[in-house]
Length: 262
Ligand SMILES: C[S@@+](CC[C@H](N)C(=O)[O-])C[C@H]1O[C@@H](n2cnc3c(N)ncnc32)[C@H](O)[C@@H]1O
Image (cartoon, rainbow, N blue to C red; front, side):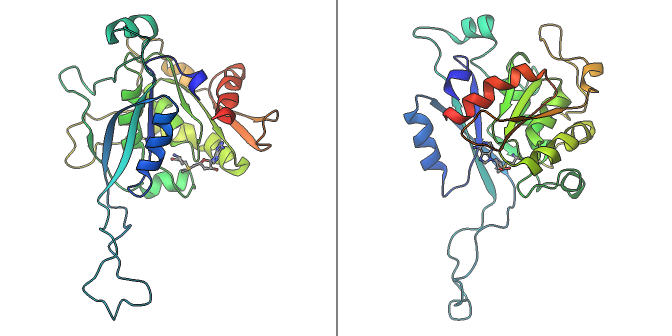
């Protein structure tokens, strides 16, 4: 992935408390800078259980805490030596995070919900993330709204749909052909949903479709109505890699190859 990223580009990666340190170490060793941990406030129902097959014997014991949040690590590809964020923003539109609103900084605690039923019905994937949360973080990932959102593990397409709803360019790869088909069908439907911020959130409501501001190269609402395209990417070590995008397919070969280098 590193060769496909501009200096200053951000990577946001979902994790869990048992794995975060392993994933973070791998990314840091690859040369990326850890910048933050986002706290997605959500009751996942993981943890809190009594010991298996001995719950009656140890009624007052829980093996690990019940999770009330999900960690998302935020990394950045380093800026060029001596470069300021302002220079990176001017040159490539990277280096920083987009605020939810001009007078509101992007915060690291994001109230969320478990993925609503209506979204799971549209995109039946076992780890589908909710649009409310994905729109908040995808929006932040492109500080000026320019550039391309890449999801190398596209799953049911929640990242690509969030990008679509924001008018951002986005491409994704998915190893499982069935999930790639699910994503291709789900992206326009998820992107068209109106979602409200979770309770406790200070985020402004992000409605779909949003058209980019003058300074950005976001697509217009008419472009968004074009259906996503899906294509088999055969020349990879992973023989069953699929690419999903509303963009011209030529653009897809870049992240698809980058994914296999990771
Ligand atoms: C945790 S799921 C992602 C779910 C996604 N965030 C969503 O909301 O639908 C990870 C996905 O990555 C896919 N995957 C695993 N290894 C891959 C690879 N090397 N290249 C592309 N996709 C891969 C899996 O098939 C799975 O659908």
